[in-house]
Every structure is written in structure tokens, then in C-alpha cells.
Amino acid sequence: MQPEHKSDQKTLHSGSEEWNVSDRIKEVIGKRSIRQAASDWGLPFATVNNWLKGAMPALDTIAEISKKEGVSLEWIAYGKGASTTQTQTQCASEPEQPYNANDMDHLAKVPTFNVEASAGAGAWINAENICDYWYVPRTWLRLERLEHAELCIINTVGDSMAPHINNGDRLLVKTNIDRELALNGVYVINLDGHLRVKRLEFTLSPIGYRVISDNELYPPEFVPAAELTQRLYVIGEVVRVFGQPAKPTPPIQ
Image (cartoon, rainbow, N blue to C red):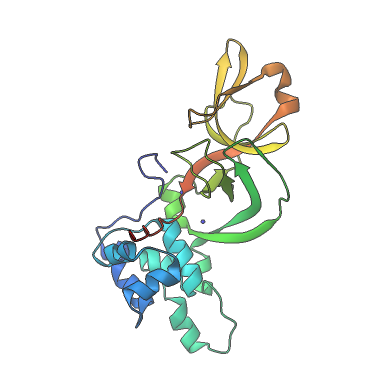
């Protein structure tokens, strides 16, 4: 189901009825109170309340809500098509689906893998099976110039890429990259058998890759050119980071 470092969550844009999300969020909330809906979605009350006042939600958060509520992501995010709840009213005997058939032409299916890329000292690859799918609007992919990208989503653990990537963030990873080029940027890599997310910097003197953590508490590593084939494989480029929703601040006792 990303971001520039100024804002790790991609937000929807306002400016037209098609992009006005607040009315559709109200419809999804229904007869519940705002506080109850926020609790159901695992979000702070203030966050949902601000959306209803016109603030723009992050796309990945809306995607999570659409899955929990069984409504169309294309509908709630962009106002296109019918909501799944309307379709279910007409076809109550059919199994519940997170998205209706009309949506699928407008959505790209992005697999989520049950592996974690360590942003710390490294984590072993336990399994690489697909555990879920995110359905991402193709219109968003076109806007982000990712319509031809082969994408997947994995989770992160650790804090070595903080503050830009934090523990528990989801990474949108582009895997169809040219690995023969000198790569510079943030990548998911397999280094010495560990799955990591790190910043790669290609150097000419000496030739090789610096493996850098954004958190200055973690020293950089270096993989010389002679050891690249044996030690380092670049899985994909991190093109977006989806952060976890903020948790409510506990009351002062």
C-alpha cells in the first residue's frame, strides 16, 4: 500500500470535489462518535477530528481504514466509483470483499512480505512469503511516477535510520532497478545474510560501497568492490516510507 523527509506520509491533495475526503470519512463513521471511530481505527481523536475539519489524511492511513471498514479505497480516497458498503447492500448474500469489482481496474496489487528489514544491527531473513496485499490507486502511482515499478512492502525494525525511518515503518520498495549502476540512496539490502535498510554511497577511492545509517550513533560500514558479489545484494530502492499513526499522549497523572 509512501516520502520526502519533511513528511514521511504521503497525503492526499485538496482542491476539488474529487479530492475532498472529509465528507466520505463522515459517511464511513456513520452513527458512531468521532472518538469511537478513532478508537476503532487505532488513531488519536484529534487526528480524525482534524480530517473532518479539512485536514488531509495520509494515503497509507486511509488505505488501512478502507480495509478495516470494508470500503473501497478508490472511493474513500478519490470519490470514484461506489463504496463497498453500497454494493454489499445490493448483494448481501455475497462474501464480504474489501474492494468491489469495479475498483480493481483502478487499483494496483502490491504484495507485503512477512520479512523485516533491520534498521539496526541486522535481522535474519525468516521467510519471504507474501502475507498480505495493499491495493494502491493507479492514479497515485502515476502521480508518483511509479506506474511501471515492480513494488513490494516490508516492515522495518530498529532505529539506525531514524529520524527518517523509524521502528515499525512500512517501506514501499521498487525492485526493478539497474543493479549494474553505481547506486546512491536508501535501499533494502542483503548484507552478510542480514536484511537491512541502509543508505548506500558508491565511492571510487577506494572502490566499493559505504553502508550508512542516518542515525549518527551507528558507524558506517564499507564493502570493497572485491567482496560485493559475496557479501552484498541490493533487493530494491526505498521509494516511500509509511509511518505508523501517532499514538495518543497519555494523560498526566
